[in-house]
Length: 215
Image (cartoon, rainbow, N blue to C red; front, side, top):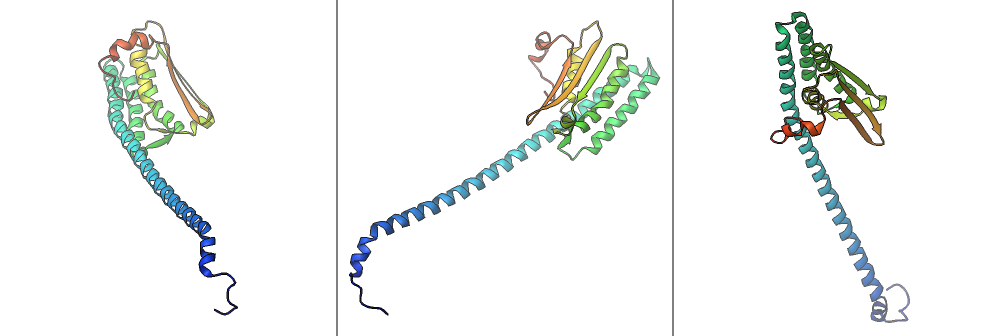
């Protein structure tokens, strides 16, 4: 409008660049669609991960609510066995059970604790077993410093140690030994609870019908 007349008619220029214009439009529309799809996929994945985390937390909390009384009832049962035979030993065991209760109350609303805290919470239970089987049971515990800082679900060790005492060492006539080892292997935390008892094969018959809590 402000310059000289075009040397080439407008419709000729439009048709000449039509293929480039259409290709550019299609590419832009495809890129926008891909970006929208990626945003939708990312939002869906975030929602899925959040739901998985909530489900895992709910399962851990439910298991914790099952294990907590189970753990304490077994310790109280051990005290009952000693109350008449060895009152002083029963009193020491009761003090350890009080520590168990205090630890359970302190950690109630925490789904994850450090392995160091988990070992500290397990220690009163181990002391109870040491009092019960003073001449029969030895317990060894080793945990590397970086492993002790790792986060674990509460009561993750209790079912393993309890089964090692009550099932792994059941029927032994020689001194029993339980070892708890923890170490890091790359990004994994490796925890071993080992006993010198009858082994899984010999104890398998009892697990055909019921598996108890925790395992």
